Image (tube, rainbow, N blue to C red; front, side, top):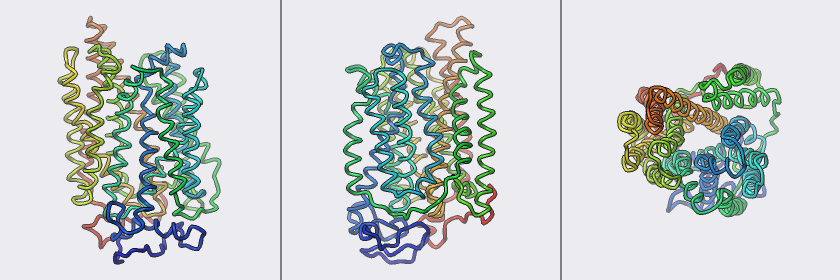
Length: 534
């Protein structure tokens, strides 16, 4: 958004819908934090006006909370064999600890646009953190599999609310001039945290029981909740919007059905269970179609859709999201496939797997904020195109170089540039995509992005595992040794990542700078078309 205001120590009132203009008991605090995104003269990073002391803790708490929550999403990937033995469950049953988490995320996230309009920011934060804390406590002391699964579902509900809240808060409170830097921290959360999960899990399992995977998160979440309650202020005015129950049901069936079906791809490929997943997939796709039509019609009639789909009419948003999804699917698929390759082909332990994955995650985390600062200077394309190209090159090198005789050093050497490429993709495109939207669509745009990321993560994980299984089976039938067969299957999986990222390179070349970027400060953001067709 363009602005002609001069930098001052105060933030003027906002005319955007839903933003508090003052007059409440917390008016002073709200005035200090609101509208940071519209004032190029204010900053959230070092040496800023008085508002910095109020905004920085809010962003910091949300970033730390989201980091722990996304870390938790992949924390069990290495622990499944241990859980199978400890809880006396099969591999198919154990997989529900991940599938159930993704299902819950996919069902809850589409409602967050509504929740952030209906409830205050402080309330959404409190509910989300309380849910995650409760789920983590139950998981840490879970005596049986059903209790652990229920705890994971509660954790996922809290996670689903925090991610859109984090992105929306950054857009609302952080000025355009510093948005890339802060989005770099968010990029660390989304790209580095999942890759760190296996590393931390392997270390803990080497020394303690699986319960400590959850125990170690408890103090972090408690401290984050306390600090958040001290500093979190409402920067929006809750609206008395009506919840469309039919949309909630269609959304739950649609997104839940698609995620479940994607998670069942391996079973479909193996032929052990085809009819039920395919039927659920069909029901899910039809429900999503009906859900989309209903959202469009509700907006056209002046109603309040559960998930406003108008952001998809903004080209910058849509193209950016597509590139994010392709990169995210590749990254999450690789995070799952690489440990299977290393344990099955190279014969290394869970702890060694974790240590092997650590440098790539660390590289992504270190580069994220640096990429964000660079984005504030040069815009998206000079960063995103090399980043997604680097990911594509790494995927094809994995296909060519990784076999049963490869070394841990080679895996690390390939995984580090993959992490760097992911940071170069996620950080700029999150800022670019959501920054292209008008303020009233921040919440819905964030919900769309996060929901589709869950679908992309489920797709990447499922297809990588299915191809790895198919490739290994084909190689075994040809007479290959088990470790060779596992390596051959892994090349099939990495080839899929190569195809996805190569397609993403073509899309990235079409990216345009956000009209809200400094070099285009005289322009306004992309206009959402007046008609509501999507």
